[in-house]
Amino acid sequence: MLGQSHYSNGQKTQEQIGDVLIVYFKNGIVKAKGQFINKMMEGEWEFYRENGLLWQIGHFSHHKPHGIWIRYNIQGKVEYTQVFNQGRKVCVPSKK
Image (cartoon, rainbow, N blue to C red):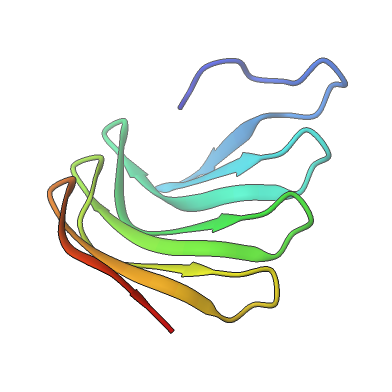
């Protein structure tokens, strides 16, 4: 995740404030944010669409998806949920 520091338009790609990493789209809108500890994604992360709407929320354990992940459609309603155990899907998506 910690690759290039700025897009060609000068917008920063990410910034870390304490244990929270915020990743930006080229237009400056937040793309993702969550705990980033010892160079690994940990705990709850939120991911957004380029227009700023919430896309999905999930949890990481040692940089791998772990626990419940919820994906939202463009109307902001739950599209489906998935369950992971250390990066492996353990439950098929349940659609709402």
